[in-house]
Image (cartoon, rainbow, N blue to C red; front, side, top):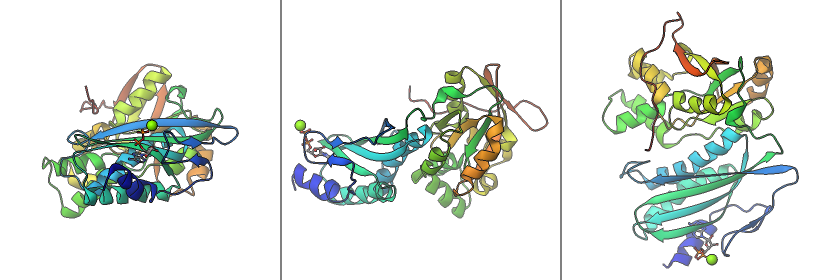
Length: 319
Ligand code: ADP
Ligand code: MG
């Protein structure tokens, strides 16, 4: 099978078709239409074998996650995904690998009505680059820079599970089999919080998705907004899996530092608390207030009794 047959069979044939795509896969570039009064949000992320996923990761899981991490970025902007491109570098043309990769990739793309509109296929060390594009109503994108003193800080879901999954995979931590299974599921199949991101438009003052660890990613909001924060580390939402697998201080450290959770961290003005409750009530995703923004710079991590947390806080860094 040559390159063009592969593109047809695995990519063009499996994607959904949207009315706003004038020309999709097949020409030198795709042609699309942005709806009136919407702005375009564009993001890209690369996954490299041995860096972002272990060498023996299943192609289904790679396909799923390469898209999920990009959709998570759109969610953090409050954008609704529409189109994606996929640049795939493969060591060899492997039918079975591509079939399984696409199963994971399109499971997610088709669930959200997203169209694959183009890409690239090259030979080389395994690497996957996805670009995701989505819409956000004019001026309603949620930035990192909008947090203000006394805003409340929230996170969705639970934190640290993906980190536990990675530690189990690397045989650094052992826990009960059912816990390992749950933690690995969180690591391999993160749920992009798109519905939450959309619901936060007009309410959230700032948002970010947690890819490198909660304290590091909140740190980006603080830097961009020129503010600080106080977090009650005992309010961090921890799953039963994590609490049952690690002693409390280590579970807290995992929740603060482990990447790959792809939950959202966002801030809202305190008076919008009830509106947040009602907007998120119809979405099956928990959310927890963990602290507040301060005028004074810096991230202060406290226990409930006011004592300072002195454990690790550093997130994942590539360089
Ligand atoms: P060109 O050489 O003009 O860049 P290519 O031969 O790379 O075009 O690709 C042919 C068509 O197939 C283009 O429309 C391109 O966007 C699409 N395409 C290539 N690889 C992929 C892929 N992995 N997924 C989706 N579309 C792809
Ligand atoms: Mg061309």
